[in-house]
Length: 264
Image (cartoon, rainbow, N blue to C red; front, side, top):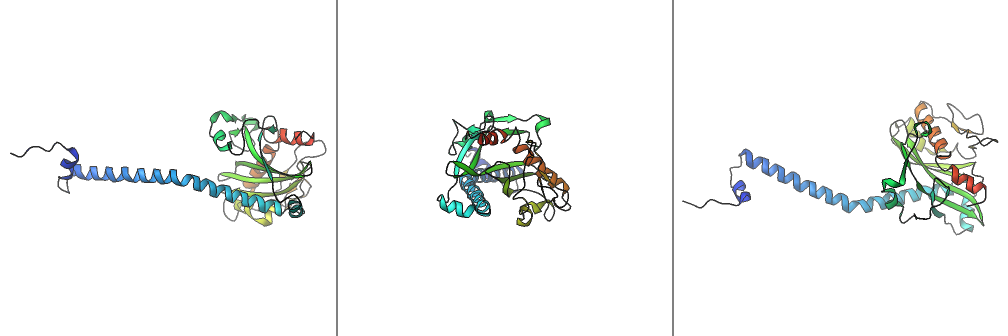
């Protein structure tokens, strides 16, 4: 009598191919191997994907800046570079602990995020980071342009954009939408250059300092409005709320105040 094979793998593989136990084992083994391969590929590709996203955002930033009248000349005069700084949104000052190099690690820590009260959450974020990376262009000691990443909930999903303000911290120099899920041909038109062209020159606040910025329902009729998007009322409203949130006290408001006081 032949000795019983105590190796469970060999015992399963020796079963007939139509055996239910062998079929289940092979299916499980193939699934496990595929899961390991997919997980490994995800881990290996993550740095490449992050680098590609960073490169795409940088390209949009450069295009946005160079599209602002007079900025190309100023960039050439100053060496064509923007300074990058991580600010503490609560104080409006440069973060003493987080740098552009350590920002990703800082944002991975839930302790560096703050919940937003429902009444203040115009952008529909639920929470916002305590720190944010911004871009500055200086003309001597004076800040002539600031680029502010903004985000919020659109009609179909999250909208990410970069808003450029002139040195008075009130006049919009331009906008570049970097990511959205809005309906093509309707809300998706927020990424079109023709619509974004209505933003430069728009003033965010009135003379009393109250935020008046609005995406109009039709053609802009005041210095505080940009043209609306026909058939995309919800996306237009979302853009209004996103800008108002990020330029208000829960967003970049403290930073803008610090710049206006000459403290940045």
